[in-house]
Length: 112
Length: 112
Figure (cartoon, rainbow over the protein chains, first blue to last red):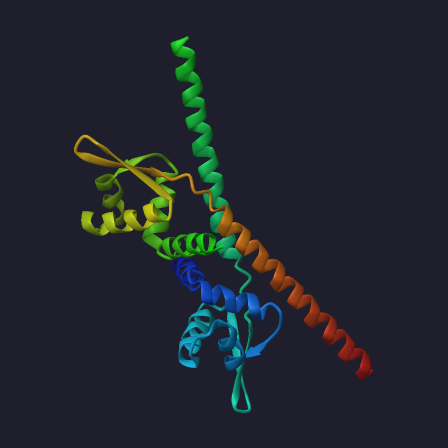
């Protein structure tokens, strides 16, 4: 459970930045080196490396040293835990809204 | 687009903490005051208020002053944008894995 919560923490935090989400979208089209990734985002190599590290810790990116460059590709973390948490939350929210709706209906009934 | 990205930033960041996810799960069972929320998490009122503020900024919680207490309930943000982003990501990951699988099959074909 703690491990599950830790994975959720890392994943949600990794996804909370637009550059990191952009890196994932870019890697969805194919692997890229650190410098190939840095260019379109207009940030320094150091800045980009930090973002990649955060994504790597969350299992969203994997990197491999190829000669003098570091090749980045999508990790195999499929966001299943995150999607399950969100689906559970939405279900809970719907149930809550349904209960509020029923309460409102009953209150109306008493008024008329 | 910037607004959409900003909403994703706030929501993912708000969900990256186990106490904040716990607060949302608790509020799914019904509204609660700040002190009612603080007790089960064993944290100070000040600490809890900060978490509630982060959730409120993301639209996940709404609060209302009732007499001397502040009543918290689930906000109406249904995490639709977040779920769409994640669904898009998973689709992209699946396509990428399919392409890698095809490449592997073709490589095998050449070998035999």
